Image (tube, rainbow, N blue to C red):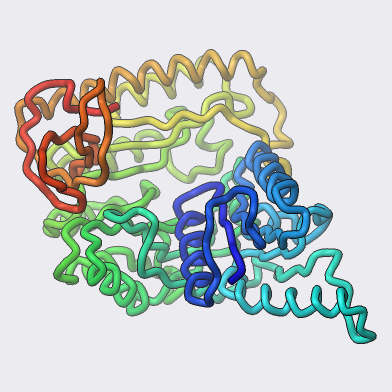
Length: 443
């Protein structure tokens, strides 16, 4: 039995795809082992969102080759897709572009035959090196890659990929070039997968995609995310539905009102912001103003009681003046996010922003990041303090040792992490917990 090891880099969509490839390997008779020495096959699902992500992808590929020089090293996903199969590193044996992860088993078997033929020295042997590359012009792809999952790595919460690709072309982002245009998964296929996960005991589903808000626009030009959510909501054994990152444009009175009528929906909304300065947003090609974004947050708070609003912010984007940064900081302060994920702008070759004038000094970016992080720390604590004295539903996920005490931990519907004290094994149970003091909230 051949041993295969997988390593994931990047987003939740990548994580879903990696778990789907693992399940394919197990079903085909491979033994999946930890990512360390001794594997026969190493599969790295790469990321290319920044130059740093590219470097990490290359490092993991070289690490795999070093762990076993005779192993088959597979580079899958966004990094090799963005490279378009060019300049393939000699440490790679197989390149799997996006939309070809589904072909993993077939390609491994074909590659193995070629290697055996080479070793046998037969006349018909083809040289397996340089790498076998399964890659296509992703910008011309209209097919959603069919992957399926029945048992994700997280045994209490399942991330479900329902959409791929992006049509937005933000000036800092390489992802439309690596993932292609919007492609949505058929609703019946999503429902079938969620039903199988529910049958295997999963209680919480997270719907995710590269640009989740665009789900369904490739069907008929209209958004269909709400239709999908309603269909998943009908599945009896699913207790919670959480949404991945949303774009502000999808938040309307009708959308929020309809969601609020679905009791399984978690009041936890990640609305990507990137900047609170209108001038910076325009350079980013974000297609909304700060005032429009603020309106969307107000709509959510109108229909949900104190929802957890989280976001992403980039500091030090090309041309960001001190005044623009102050505007962004003040706007984040005004919104009162539960969590703000702060990123220092990282130049990504191949994007418009990488060629823009006014690249910001690294020390300036670091200083601005520190200010935004401190604001996030204060806002996060203030939001969590509102829950002291309240009784909340917690989905228990794992054991932990906190200050020398054994506890179990889980998350509320708002995604606040809570310590639960019990002598019973409560994993994958939803329990009511009264938050008596700050020490029960884990940061």
